[in-house]
Amino acid sequence: MGEYRRIEVIVGIFVFIGIVSMGYMALKLGEVGGLGATGYELTARFSNVGGVRPGADVMIAGVSVGRVEKLRLSKSDQALVTLRINNDVKVSDDAIVSVRTKGIIGDRYLRISQGADDTYLKNGDEIIETESAINLEDLVAKYVFSGSKP
Image (cartoon, rainbow, N blue to C red; front, side, top):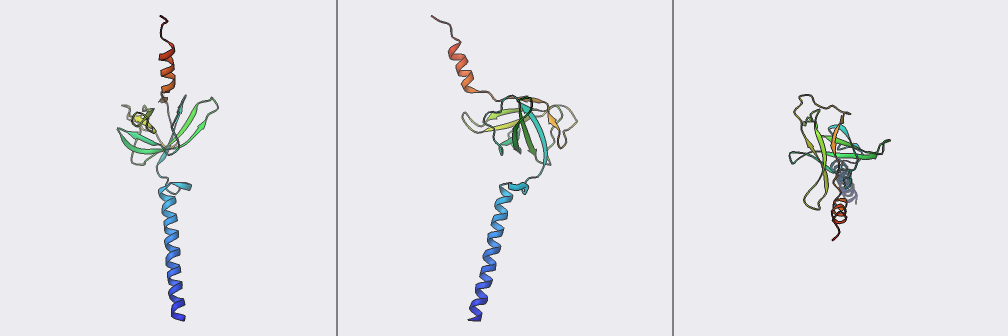
């Protein structure tokens, strides 16, 4: 009976370690609670970021270089977006950030177009040049209702 009890305890410890390890990996991979968050933060102001969500990709030349950390409304009623950029990526001081769509009706992401400046942004800096999201409904409405009457 004592040997059976010892095996139960060993199996119990093994299962507990496995569950704790899986929980840690889920938090780390999901970047919950700051566990998986690495890199530096930049901010950008937009008049419209329709469709961009926290966790959306930030890309340079089609390569994912970071994530959208959070979105909030600034005091001047603009969208203030916080980006987390990978440590090994440098963003130039004159870079332009624009809201883009993956495919025709895909997810929204932020695209950074590097400038020619040799100075780079640091943690907490703001990207000045931004291009807001294009609202397809507004474009269609403008086209439909701007036609001349017969």
